[in-house]
Length: 374
Ligand code: COI
Image 1 (cartoon, rainbow, N blue to C red):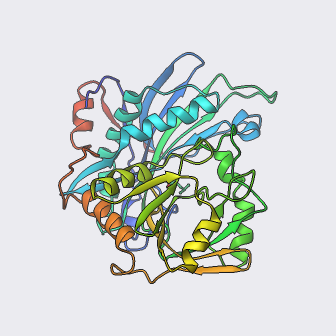
Image 2: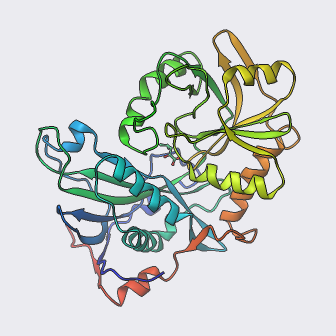
Image 3: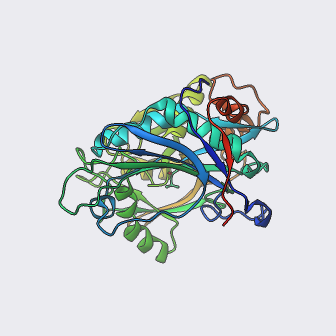
């Protein structure tokens, strides 16, 4: 990719890599050595750089803390024939900017996002786990930095990318509770944006569901509490009567990039795929008729997470065992993505981006420094 920005790199002199148990990687706990940082000064994105991962100093008056101008992405890097690759990186960069627009935040140039990301992944390539189903999770985040507690849009922002090696987000099939008291988002709200507030508001209902023995809530539409939305950490797919059905993205749910990839694959594999309103009553009806074959969630973190049980009021839907025979669609998608990421099948859709060489190409423009000893 073209290296049009000068992005100096300061390498850590105290790598934490050797202290990490790469066989035991609970999601979200381990953070890699470096991060990409750039600031918005009210007019321009300035001073892009790669630095050792470090804590930030935040004013108590920071606008993001009060009024929620904070958006993020979740993406993954893997090793494909030994070399680091990103999955659909450009689409993530574009989605971040769609979230930015909704939250009244500045857009970051896609080329700057992608150059910083490629260099960071090339630099921290040793942090990418190589076992199947494991990857380097990438967290781009943008937040307001004005120190001002009146309600208005911040003028200044920080954009960061940091990473961490992860294992499966849901190591087991998940049990879902159909949530009819709380809702995730209403039409006209911010449900389509990947903003911090959507996740904050999901925590209480999720905690209540966890206490009752469920892993996650299945959100319903905010008006009739009738139509399935998403799970909050993933989009949902149902296989019913031989068709694959997923709720349409009508403004209240996240436009999942894994969801988009699955729709493309399923269509190309010859499945009948429907993106539409799907009511919980239709799902229960299909279950009683014996034609509900599969249910799974899709997401960057989750990849494919099979659903084992759905409870709606006093009705329990028990889904078939998770194996290739009973879950052919979800299993095929999961295998495809895992195999693709590891370079075991050809990248026929051009979804992978190589990172090798990004640092070297960029070095021609900016020196790589050693972190000053402390
Ligand atoms: C992802 O799938 O990457 C997400 O952002 C969901 C969750 C881990 C926050």
